[in-house]
Amino acid sequence: MNQEKPRTRIQEKNRARVLEAALEVFSRHGFRGTTLDEIAREAGLSKPNLLYYFASKDEIHVTLLEGLVDRWLDPLREMDAGGDPRDELLAYVRRKLQMSRDYPRESRLFAQEIVQGAPRILEGLATDLKALVDEKAAIIRGWSDAGQIADIDPHHLIFSIWSLTQHYADFDVQVRAVLGEGRDPLAEAEVFLETLFKRLLAP
Amino acid sequence: MNQEKPRTRIQEKNRARVLEAALEVFSRHGFRGTTLDEIAREAGLSKPNLLYYFASKDEIHVTLLEGLVDRWLDPLREMDAGGDPRDELLAYVRRKLQMSRDYPRESRLFAQEIVQGAPRILEGLATDLKALVDEKAAIIRGWSDAGQIADIDPHHLIFSIWSLTQHYADFDVQVRAVLGEGRDPLAEAEVFLETLFKRLLAP
DNA sequence: CGTGATATTGACCAATTGGTCAAAAAGAAA
DNA sequence: TTTCTTTTTGACCAATTGGTCAATATCACG
Image (cartoon, rainbow over all chains, first blue to last red):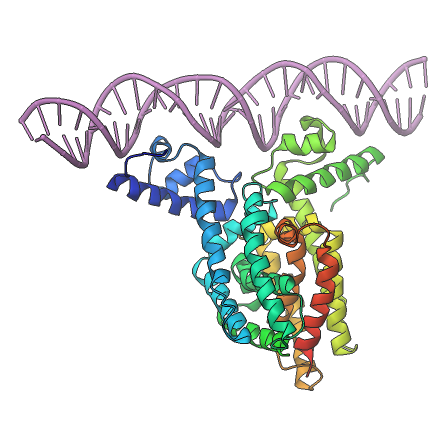
């Protein structure tokens, strides 16, 4: 049984500093591309001090990812079987776009983990994530069977919401390079995706 | 003037071996996450031998990316202003999906470069890519102004085609984890995206 | 204020990394 | 077959990296 003492005020503060710094650097360079020195510098701590709070570089990364994966499922969890189908799905799109706006570094951290084969979270994807998606897909299937939305594959609908929304965080530099200055990618995306999903979902 | 001798048969063969190996490893671990030893091992060459053909790890990566970026623009280049709007756009979607099917490692290499801020190709994105996208966006704008397709933002339409199609290469492990065994993500994506874009584009 | 616990750090370690070099092996041309 | 060029490699290098340690500084509690 885990009977560890509660963490001290200094521990809480410094662990948060390390995780914030690690998020910044891991999201830019990936796990293997990041050094402990870079995280320490970003955190304003010495390297041995950083390792006083976390056992290893790997533990920092895993701690970040585990916190992230849980938060990443929240927007989908909120989809309500009892709600209006179109409204529920459009609300989900908006929540996901808000995640891209509010947590771009987390999105990129997650994206890099997946693109590299999801070495640390593959098991979680195949269990928790799959279970949640299957549950919501069954709800969406029910909606389309009842003729409330178009007859579309619910899994690929969810994939399309993920890809379309996360794109604006993950591929941000490309989107901004192409759009040029003076344009607001996420505001424009909001309008575009509202239209796209309304048309896609119309029965 | 570059008056280098043409490359020998052995040079051509071994450069290709290095690039193929590098593609495999860079797409899994990213630039900084990859070691010369890993590339050498994958290529079946010794490390000094690998460096006989390429000046540095960086040169290998840049050579790969430059070849890739050019190929990545081909599907969009093929869009024909004189063609039927809907057919041209659906054909572009199909070409992009085929790229995800045929070149998943290249897609992941590209994705990682962009997600990490596109340090090596940002200038190219802001010039060549932007110019091409602007050109095609103007064509699409013309089509919707003429009432031939829906009134939608052409840039974001192109972004949606990229994100929806590349998702199946880049996030492959997540897609397959969620779908489970016995399903063919890309075949299903083809059907789904055909429907999505037909609905989106209908005037 | 003293004491014990916690926090911090400069020095250090072994292993790894990107890359070099001189010598030997193999290839190609005369 | 000889000779010149190209290719290959084991050994090596300096720098970097993940992590450790003992000593010191700071904190917190009585």
